[in-house]
Image 1 (cartoon, one colour):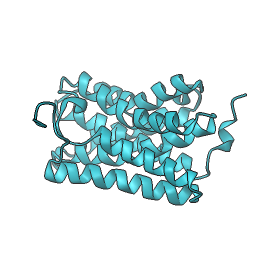
Image 2 (spheres, helix red, strand yellow):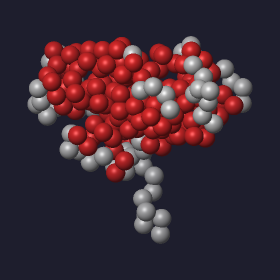
Image 3 (cartoon, helix red, strand yellow):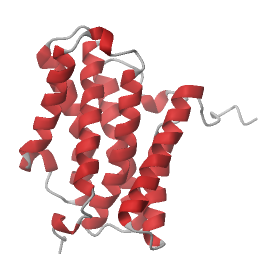
Length: 209
């Protein structure tokens, strides 16, 4: 029997909202920087915000969250409206990357907590964290005609993997879930921030020779 969502830790909804908001903002910014319409900004915000969570829910057998909870789509649309009505000069070129980094870390940890709440074993649950954190950004890049973040050298999936694995490992060691979430999300964000700042990357195939 699938456990009810009420078994999720009490902090989990805050991670969900944080991930939704910043991912939606990154999607809206991607459209805004290409001079798109308000409708396109809203679409990019929604698809970026809910993309990873949708794939996760389908894989773990959960109801697709944003279809049953109107607050999710509302948060995405509000973020699109905020981007639309604010001056372009407020948003530096690096803003998209930093929004994405926050969303990646928060959503990776939330993905693990939700997967575990639905009875998924630790290793697949950690992988669901990676899916939750990365898929929305991948969809955004594809729709925007940008090279997928997966194909860029800088650390991205690795940061999501660090956040989800560290959170899962700490919880298994008996660390309180809220503390583990802060540590896991903080570590994931720090690694992604370092990758943005210093262009950190794993060795590519062929470079190891």
